Image (cartoon, rainbow, N blue to C red; front, top):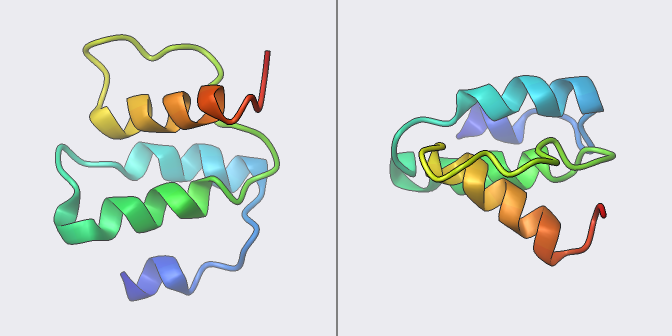
Amino acid sequence: MQQLEAISKPVTGEEARALVSCFGPDDCYGVAWTLLHLIETGPTPVLTTDPGPDANEWHQRLYNRAVNGELFL
């Protein structure tokens, strides 16, 4: 958790795209929420197409939050 908190915010688009690959199969005791919020500091949504029903739940969550926030059309 400390390593994620040490990353300067806002992250760049490149950093956000790299961080999205760090999600695991669970919430890792809340670390996934910290990662999600860090990714969302980037300049644009990382996932702009629906990752599909078999996608990692955190990828789906990132996409849904971008849709619900009307961050892209």
